[in-house]
Length: 106
Image (spheres, rainbow, N blue to C red):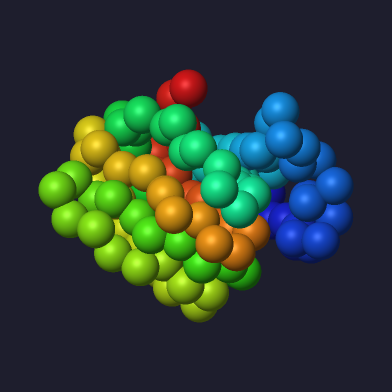
């Protein structure tokens, strides 16, 4: 199964109540968009899958285990499975492409 997805079309599925929208799922990976507004709280927990974030737009800081890093548009961030991580100090709306491998289990 091959597919082309427009990010702008997928953003229509995002809301304050549902900031994550998965648009691709195959056994080996899943992908979605995650949008966090300025000053939002990122309440995610560690995942059982490896994860890649691509920062499409925005600016924030990210906690990766005990480290803190800046997250800016154009950055690619790898998060290994089971690592505590979250975005904070969101100063510009953060739009993230998220890829899980294998597919996110929930």
